[in-house]
Image (tube, rainbow, N blue to C red):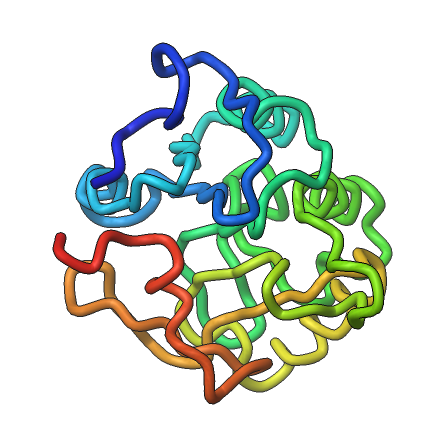
Length: 201
């Protein structure tokens, strides 16, 4: 089962240095109800970055990712963000867009787009000869119903500027329930949550 810090090396502030196609990064917001349960449920292959929704800046969030996962070098299979959401809207940090980001807030905003580019720089490049949007390597946006309505435009925009696959939730799931975030981009695949959480938790 996962732990509340990094996995693979030292204590909670040590950087993970091993390159492993099965490793993932998951940002879990304390804006959620009982986020500590989600931290505890993370799989061993997942490096968890707890997010301080009310107090952190984007620079502090990026610093926390680097502290736990090391410098970005396209060494992880995916990066996930877990917070509240609704159609076309994703919560990230209170200081960013007042706490809610949608297509209109993100498009053309270099600061926010650069943050997503930072996350994408952790995502592995697909093997030679495969499509650059290989579904094995991606950014996962786990926020309720984000990909509904205009959310699909947001996904398309992010994929266009990041050159990595972006998956997002199409259903209204509660972390307190049996979480199964379905995805709009790959409707026949397993739920996003299955990649990040211990199935026995």
